[in-house]
Length: 108
Ligand code: SF4
Ligand code: SF4
Image (tube, rainbow, N blue to C red; front, side, top):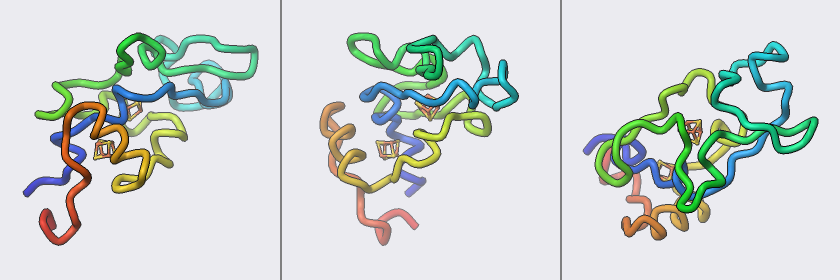
């Protein structure tokens, strides 16, 4: 079995993703400016994550089938810190009609 995230993407289509303006390329960070929308002077948000339903503009593929982050190396800190297998992960998966994150023994 491949890594569960590669056939999921639910977290990228469930939550607002906000981060410091200092993470944008504009201020020397990595996140492409065109994918970041202004929230406040100090905060940016991944484009699409506050839509209804949410879907990050950087997400490629289809949630629940085959998904990938189009800016994986340049993704913002909330994405880097999001833990696969966490309660939030399972919540996102459930919202998308997916089963809970599988036990590691079943996919490694
Ligand atoms: S919701 Fe969980 S399993 Fe799905 S992509 Fe995000 S971290 Fe991976
Ligand atoms: S930047 Fe990448 S990892 Fe973060 S929400 Fe968007 S698609 Fe998902």
